[in-house]
Image (cartoon, rainbow, N blue to C red; front, side):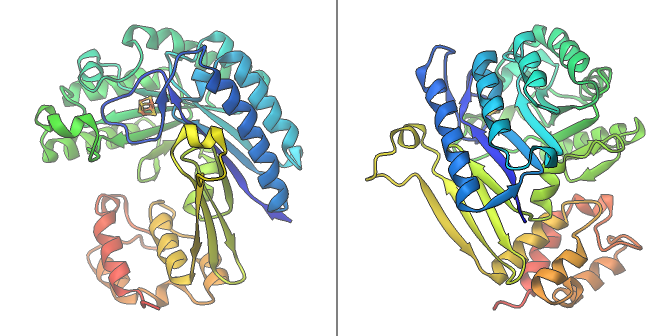
Length: 384
Ligand code: SF4
């Protein structure tokens, strides 16, 4: 049986936030490309499932962009279409859809629930109007309480909320107030992202309005500690959760388990556990080319992941989790224990008290220095 998660990238948003480097294009609801997208991505899903002989899809994740801008009618069609194409509907464990409050009205939320979505991930980012305005965050702040209340009524704690730290005009009391407000809707899951300034985003030009780096780090740590105290332990670099509410789909990425990626900007990876190698297809982030399907323009790139590349990626993804990489899976794929590849790095980090006692994983404090750990580990990895 070949099992794979499915990721569908919906490349549309109601506007463009200044810090964003995801691929999306701003659209109005009457844009005919929204209909074309829904039809074509379903055709691509059908063909990918067939070509790769996928017999079970345990998780589906519709992200973006902003899937909720498709509106209730198109979403109903898309969700029904995805459900109809699943080779083993009983095997589906989790079906996530990302939404933004400004387009997640009652009709959209009910369509999601009625047509198979089991987990809603809502992009809140902040309740603080000056911070939102400073980064041109799409959506009205005043709409948040009503939309969050509705989402919580419909999805209960199968609701995940995204929050951001390090925003302009954000102080610790403002951030902690944001967290208090978010938790008042009893979400099962919180993603806490530190604002990063990506090159070529408008925010890169006005970085002087942002908190200084030390202050931004302090804010993130204060938010982390507040979530943990509130009963949401951290389980990954940016993710906090009530018991049993982890994102099964994202766990597939962190374990490097098969997923198909569809839609412009979407990327999928299939792993051969026998040889410890992989194959990746990434759709080029160009909506018009993706819709045209003109044979003279490539719409995706393909990449072969040889064993060293896959080992590196498995370490990078696995150490993001507080439970660490799955050592048994690593050994099964690569025919050698993980510890044997980076013994000196592990010894050094253990000596500094930055590895957990009984699990091959970084401590919570060490996760703050994940990039340093990875740089040391990659340096030590055999290069063939
Ligand atoms: S809504 Fe999300 S995907 Fe769309 S522009 Fe803003 S940050 Fe990017």
